Length: 149
Length: 149
DNA sequence: TATAATAATGATAATGATTATCATTATTAT
DNA sequence: ATAATAATGATAATCATTATCATTATTATA
Ligand SMILES: [Mn+2]
Ligand SMILES: [Mn+2]
Ligand SMILES: [Zn+2]
Ligand SMILES: [Zn+2]
Image (cartoon, rainbow over all chains, first blue to last red; front, side):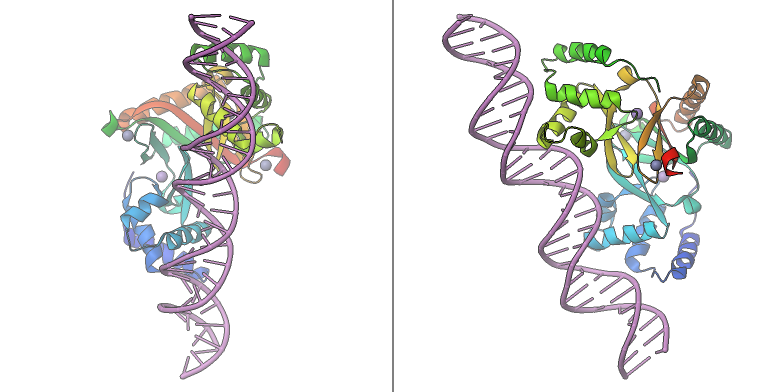
């Protein structure tokens, strides 16, 4: 996963939020900063830890809800039942996740585009066969991460 | 998805449970029956509805926990943040899920084996590239189901 | 069979994550 | 400067899930 510069994110996010009378406050910026720096989605608890004392939980959850509303962030489920947050794909790019079943961490991973297009075509095909209007796919790879080996 | 006969399930499950001093009681059988009949994983709430009045929630959750322990059922996350339960793959076979983002239902879908092997090889490859010991993959296809079209 | 040991049940309380309230404070618009 | 609007933070409320524990059912064994 290529880690892009945070300033570009702030600019893009400011633009999108201002369209919708939504303010890009310090608390919300803090969330975006943390998510930008992470190489995987973070849970509310993890985000709270990164800003211990500085952001009350109620505000954190509200920021997350609002950022999701504005499509700045998305939620990821699938590792245990833990909800994790990450920057939306229009910021971070399409990617998938390596989920360590031992320590529970979730790491972003981009597939080579040839693989990605394979998946895309098979998803289309399966949708047709099942008369299901496929919109997008979520591929989580479960296993043991390097640190847990 | 091929719907196999429930009696075979009961036999196999009885065998596996008896190995571990775990009883296959009516409540547990009821859960297995419901899951067998369903064409997708069910949430605890949905299971409770299917047996309104007959199974107290505490018993239901305990049955689910015990059946999961004994690897009779597995949990599926990923549709909203809802935890859903399904029969383990050694009973139901490996498959994936069509998740309707409109009504929230989750339907089982088996991929043609050529697709499945494509996924398998790409997962292996990605694991190598990321020095991640890949064990299995979870592919959810999100979109709009037939009823919601 | 009678009895002890073990497991399951069901009512209820406790927990933990998330959401809702609401008064206060900060920002924006006029 | 003032009014309108949005954000904050403390707190309470919800909701799913888990833990307790006394009671009941099942199994083992004398
Ligand atoms: Mn991610
Ligand atoms: Mn399934
Ligand atoms: Zn790990
Ligand atoms: Zn639907």
